[in-house]
Amino acid sequence: MKMEERDATLALLLVQGVGSRRFFKLKEAFGSAVNVWRYASRDKLSRIVPEKVADAIVRGPDEALVKKVRARVAESEGWLLFYQDIDYPEALRQIDDPPVLLFGIGSKKALQGPCVAIVGSRKASTYGQKVCCMFSKGLALHGITIVSGLALGIDTWAHRACVESGGVTVAVKGCGLDVKYPLRNTALTQKIKEKGAVITEFFPGVNAEPGNFPMRNRIISGLSLGVIVVEAGFKSGSLITAYLALEQGREVMAVPGNIFSYGSKGCHELIREGAHLVESCEDVMDILRLCSLKPAKEEVDAAVNPEIGKAMTGKVSVVVDKLRAGPQHIDEIAASCSLPVSKVAAMLTELEFLNMVVALGSGIYCLKKGDE
Image 1 (cartoon, rainbow, N blue to C red):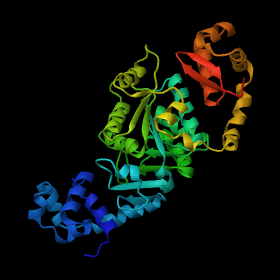
Image 2 (image 1 turned 30 degrees about the vertical axis):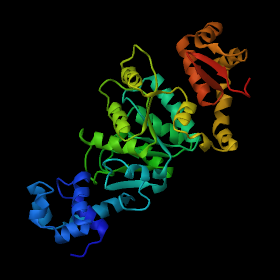
Image 3 (image 1 turned 180 degrees about the vertical axis):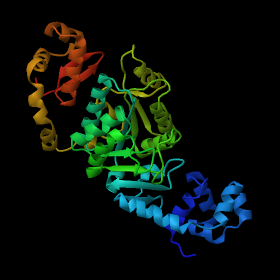
Image 4 (image 1 turned 90 degrees about the vertical axis):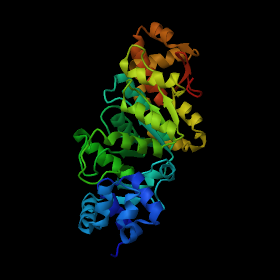
């Protein structure tokens, strides 16, 4: 048998019952994937893997299937990234159970980070959407790669906001690269790959099964320096990502929300358990010690200025005028503008994203220096 290491690795992963953990056990025992196929006896294999798996390996590699997989990846204009490759993301390599192989489309460079994950509920509220966009766009403007899971809800808003700001985002799928899931994000997937990447550890044709998503989540957190949870219920998959991040030694950050909303319960529980409470991109940058990654001023201006003109029209400009007198509580601003607190909160969120307003905590806001 003449197989190079990557094809031998691919052939092993195609054996039913061989996942990342068993692959690394086999490699440790025999020195390489090629050696597993070349020298492993059934007796030696059965000490490491179940008998059915040992029998399958003894029968030899399915070289035709290996070629078929490579052909399907090529059809998707994709690429394979193996654990031993020099451009495999180092952050992911350091977790307890890194994927042996990543399938991807787009730019491999997008995986080099620095990355921050943004995750949350599939049923995102208007508040959650706005907060998600604020963090995603703001961090992207600081040169941070945004990582999420391409699911509907917060994941979609995180990817979309990053793309709209001209930033780099990485989408981690819980299915094969060629499977259009969720179908509604097909167009978004195409936009992501223009500057970022869409990746998965699942082979072409693998459907989005419930058991796949915890595996996907460990990649989301493993790629990232920290995870921001925007909205999450008590049994949300986002909490799984948060706890995986803790196990991997990553920072966990949570956005506080409405105490009457079920979608805030998971975030508040994380905060009670010690997660960082974050209200701005500056909070995230400070926690992750990424302050030195701010872009040149002209880059920020180019991205923000068109929106500043829009924000300074109508009632939003009234809110800005009220803040010129100095820091004020959101209730005071709402009362003086004769507007509902909910509308003022939405305006302040927009102004925060535009870097015109700073949240001082406890509902108090002030204008950014230079805008007074």
